[in-house]
Image 1 (cartoon, helix red, strand yellow):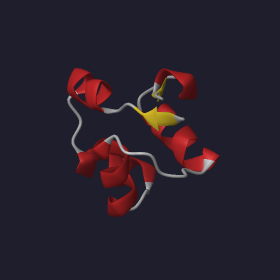
Image 2: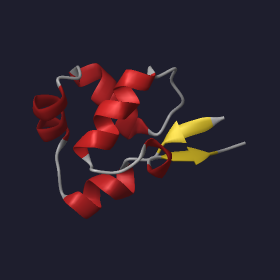
Image 3: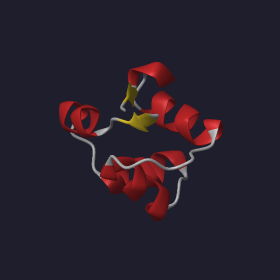
Image 4: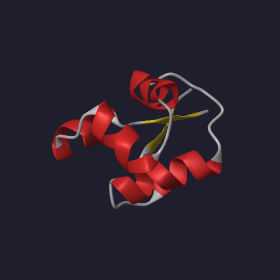
Length: 66
């Protein structure tokens, strides 16, 4: 299983959840779920928006967990 790892990216770049919501058009609920570190079934479009916002590739924000 993979989870989105935004915690380190967020602090490195110093963006708030509101910054991401405003820039990507994602809902507050979606961004909150992304930052929670829990597993959700994200659409590829959502991951692409987040990766584009942080100027990285999708695989840079995913980590594999057991």
